[in-house]
Image (tube, rainbow over all chains, first blue to last red; front, side, top):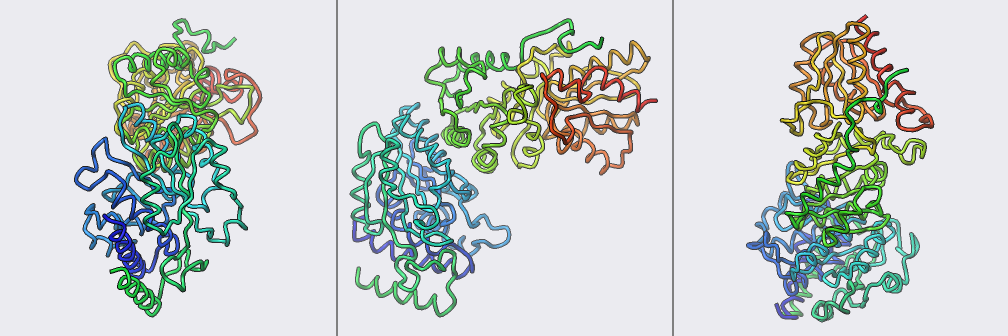
Amino acid sequence: MSEKELAQKSVEYRKKILKYIYQAKAGHTGGSLSCIDILNVLYNYTMNVDAAHFGSPDRDRYIQSKGHTVEALYVVLASRGFFPESDLDTLCKYQSHYIGHPTRKVHGVEQNTGALGHGLSLSVGAAIAGKLDKRNYRVFTVLGDGELPEGSNWEAALSASHYKLDNLCAILDKNNLQITGPTSAVCNTDPVDEKFEAFGWSVRHVDGHNVGELMAAFDALPFEPGKPSMIIAHTVKGKGVSYMENQLKWHHGVPDHQQYADAIQELDLLEETLS
Amino acid sequence: MDATIENIAVKQRANLEVFSGTLQQLAQNDRDIIVVTSDSRGSGKLVPFGQKFPEQIVEIGIAEQNLVGVSAGLASAGKKVFAVSPACFLTARALEQIKNDVAYSNNPVKLIGISAGVSYGALGSTHHSLHDFAVLRTINNLIVVAPADNFETEQAILLAAESDIPVYIRFGKKQMPLLSEDEKTFEFGKGRVVREGRDITIIGTGETVAPGLLAAEKLEREYNVSATVVSMHTIKPLDYGLLQNIAATGRPIITVEEHSVYGGLGEACASFLIQNNYHNRFRIIGIPDEYTVTGSQTEIFNHYGISEAGIAGAALGLVQ
């Protein structure tokens, strides 16, 4: 997909995230909207993975460490043909496989996540296996900035540089908000770039909503041979819906009928300007 | 003087050494066999493995959560992964990784809890794993195994290597006697009858089967009481068929485990018996809910009656 097509796709995804969260009356709205551009570029531009060859040992892997923003992953996987989008009508319903965190019961999901601080270790393991088998696949994982205090992240960060995993790319969805308040006030992890650099990673910053910048960053992987790459994606929680942006209540707030209509209207207008 | 495990005539190697040797055999023919350690290759007797197969050992350092998470990631890419760490740390520090990354995600990691139970003796409770059966029994999609002797250990490792669901195997580091001449069958979920008797059944698991067997011999020799002894090496899935056969005799049952008396083999058996209307006289021997006494593994066993004398005494109390 071209940069323009990707930008249009992001709007479409945002509308779908809102649709299914509105329908299910549940979901992690703000964080799904903050990471959706990253997933869009990964699945529609960067990664070598598709529904028909998901079992291929050479596929690129995506492991979502911040599992709670699964709605973003669902709409991307559906659009890439991993399952019919209509499956999402069952989101969080009794006996549905489409639950509030990723599980391998859903085609296209690599790992069951949801407890925070797990994605990076899983990704390190998959990346080490790739090196051992001399396969060329890459492993991508999206971390939330709120989950960084989990110590397991830093254990995994050490292993990633120790094993020189330049086939591993972590993307930090740095939206600066978590359920209690600003991440800097809950448990400050800044300067997070210096911390990862100190742990042996090669770090770059991007605007996490600028698909062109994301494309360029992924094109540049690995940033340095022999080092894992960290993309710090500066994002806005609730991005794309003005009344949700940077508002704590939309961490897992669900829009009511009028709010949903307003959000779609705003995104429709944006879509027109992009076409 | 009571006999102890050390006095059993036919001593073999420690189960830990059998594990290490078996892994080397496996690795020789299968490059997908990967050992993951947390600064534990020495205590896991895996230094020779690391020397022979440097490409097949992944050192994580002292970081058990990462050990298990990385192991799950390796397994997801088709590796046959043995995550090796002292049972106490593996099953407590990394419990969430076991629950989510291994069991829930069905990454068939082989979790190897070394120096399990009270193997570390006087190092104290930080190094004891008396909780692992209890917590791991509640996790779906995980086989829980405590092999008794060298034969069971070797078989468990071989089966685990090919298992497509996760397995937890725990053992100690003491030399173990061979429990039975019957070396023909070993299956996860199928207990082994290592001695046939008529009056009472002693069900042990892991390193408690040996004192159970000693107790049975003492009972026969000194009291004319004839005991069946079972190695219930698989805690989950528990061998309900065998339990049913044992219970149907109406004879008393004693369970013996190197674990808290809460939530382990004994309570698993009791639950089955009660829910199936068996009312055999029943006794659980294990580590009680208290600040564990200081001592070697043998001293701790003797203190809590996980011994020839302790088990025989309990048996006499039940058969009267």
